[in-house]
Length: 391
Ligand code: NIG
Ligand code: FE
Image 1 (cartoon, helix red, strand yellow):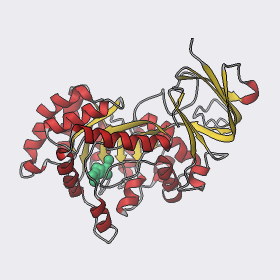
Image 2 (cartoon, protein in one colour; image 1 turned 90 degrees about the vertical axis):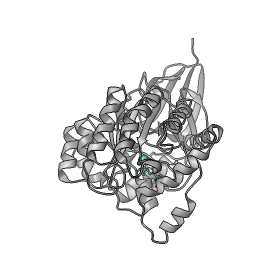
Image 3 (spheres, protein in one colour; image 1 turned 45 degrees about the vertical axis):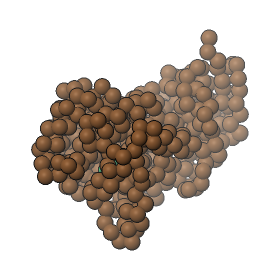
Image 4 (tube, protein in one colour; image 1 turned 180 degrees about the vertical axis):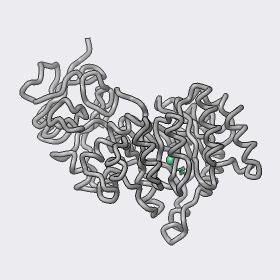
């Protein structure tokens, strides 16, 4: 028999179950309680109706929400790019080429150094309420370096993505076709056993639509499911390719035509917005309002990486999405939890309803709205992962 615990006296509980509470998409329950049994949620509802349990935790009239689901990060890397950031903030533009700096540092790093970095950024993210995360390779760009990044990642998460097609490896810069052949051949064979997803950076300076299609379809043939870096720095074919290939997610979505928005609205691909990247590259914001109004499922994630978005903070991304991308606080919180789960095609995380994992964040605030209302303030005061209090 597992131990049951009730977290009670919750002023506002975000369940993301619209059959509960106020029947909004957030399924917001006031004066609420959550019952955890083992690693799962057993019950959610009004405090006064909670069933008897072994243990009781008093939330003290504060807010509880599902742990954040960060569905897009790049945490396997060596070095950092402080100088590039500094130069950019002095006026130099961002381009895909900066990735090469991190490729050199990543190749030079030992396995232990790579894993130490990953562990550190994950601990940071956990303290800020992230209980599920995806992470990618993409800074190795040789068969051995990509495979080892994925092996290290797989020790820490099930959501591992092979991004050999991040940029053309520097040693094959003159022969992109040979690099695509490597990524779709020997490198894919070595990497597929360690990954669930395949990704490609479809962008000027990285891979065009035909190359991206070749990478994603080769990955699919090896049992990996597609997701894609699309329409980040310029308009392009990425988003429509994502929908055509039933990718779980098209990520960035900063430059979208009406046809791109229509394709996302008609398809089953989530639009994952990564405002940390626009913040850190001083770029134009993606238009979340336009996507939500068109009926597109939107996720919000950090894109944590040393080049374009060196933040592990989902609360920071929520605040940016509300302030600068037209989202309401409710929408942004939904996108950072249930939206992230949808982008990973998961229904066992991102919601607090019976059967889901007991992954929850307790805020030192009476409402989830404070995540946007009090930007930059460390509001996360408790985190449970798989039913265990970890913060
Ligand atoms: O998601 N867009 C491509 N990849 C990363 C940036 C990588 C880098 O600059 O190191 C991104 O923004
Ligand atoms: Fe990215």
